[in-house]
Image (tube, rainbow, N blue to C red):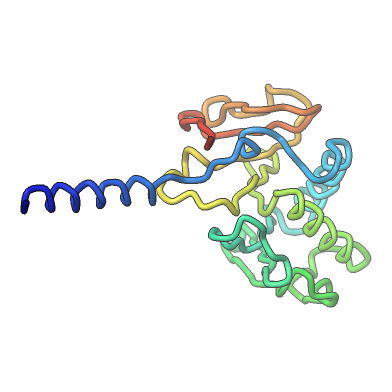
Length: 198
């Protein structure tokens, strides 16, 4: 009787361990799926790239904080951050939906007439699952669908979007291509295990 009890407890613990470690990886994480059209997203990314690559501060990037436990990021509670790789600083600009956020003095390096456009672009891209970015080799790489819980499978589940004219501009030693729509490419780490949930 004692052995049956131990076996039942062990089986229950193992079942709980495996059920808790199952991560949700929807098929949309391995394909380019946006709320807006591909042409619209390409255009928005192109304009944002111009903001990021042609500002007075080189290495300027942005990000919106993401609740990893919420599959639908709530912009009303999300903060906009900007970073400057030259200064090695990350600054909280404020709640991204604040109608006066464009007046923040930390955005001084963006022409004052274009700051509202910048914030609007951040919101549009975030609604289309592009929540932050980095600059690598002169290209802007956006994080894609980062609001889905990844636990310790981060490297396998990280996805990136890049806008380039050709595959030759993608670092094939670092990334592999999962999907392409016109000049938008969906990337994963080169050695990432690619899988989806049922």
